[in-house]
Image (cartoon, rainbow, N blue to C red; front, side, top):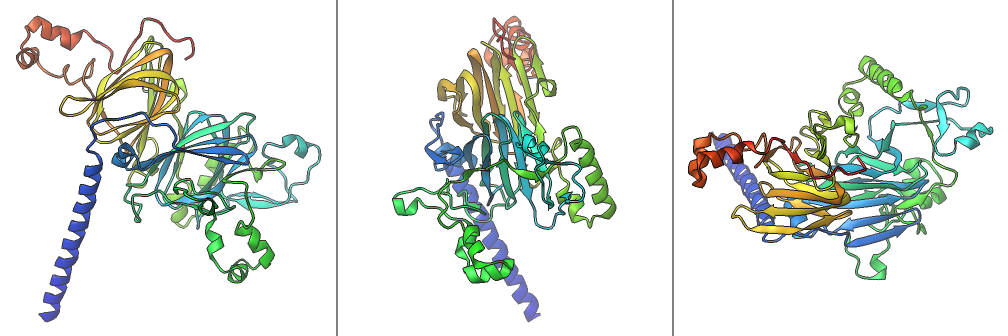
Length: 469
């Protein structure tokens, strides 16, 4: 009985402690969302590297803290490689421009992309096909799957998963990454932490105050060089390269001669992916079936993938956990991408279950955001490259400028949902005419005008359609 009483008391103490911690975290997060004024954010820090630029939006900004996210934009030059790293929180990337390759490294997953000197079928030197066709000898290699990415793609990277990005195109590769630092998978604190696996780059999330603090490092430099050499079974001189000593190239480096990797020819990738999944299901141990073969990307930029389309207004497409299962319970983010033609209006609405982090891709729009007491917290034009957070349940309306407006909104829920305040599917439309008339002290005829005059569901067309669709 004594043991039972002791265990019961321990359980009560532990349970009480967990509740207190949860309450403190909830109160801390709620305090950060006491916002009286919003603003469209520009990058607060810019880091120049050998083959690109990293632009960081201040994650200590109140509205980003309210949403519990950090935002980074990468501009990668042709043949530029964003060095491999991993984060303490999941992230959702949207590719704004260009094309490239995304590498994901997960311990325990098989190296299903293989080549050997005696069989060169299906091998290409990415970005340097001309040299390969001229007789360049490719040495045998094997690695985990590398995925092609392009403009309009959403790509998901889970907490602690290693990844890198390479630009194999002829133009700049531009992407924006939203990191969900308030996700349950982050067991540290509400600070983004990037762990680089190569080079000696400046950490984009550290506030630099002196030249001595500006030098970066990767995770290997903290280990004893001799023991690390023993762990890899290599020479200690090679370990110094691994640790990034005397490497001043930054976090985006130039790949001389182009990235060399095992990669299926265009048109074969889908077939190869299906064959790979068949092999995993036939011979996998369960881990591969659950983790290694998950889909990590989907394009939401193509017009044919639109979920909402108004011929004279624009289109909206999105992605939730129903489209990418990895979002369900693991990453817990979703996205919505919209293109508004000249003068088109996105009807007033609010996010039911999430904060919305809006990144302006192209053009401009006049935003109005209203909080619960009816006060306008933002009333200004948002232009390309700016980020604004719309807190949960805050009402938003926007009208595109003369060049139209294109944006992507990252939602802090795996199935972000909205409610509209005007239009065919709005809350007003759902009410009886008599209820509307009584609520607003208007005639029933006026109530019918409020209810039925706007037939579009989300986008109201402008007077003229934008030339670029």
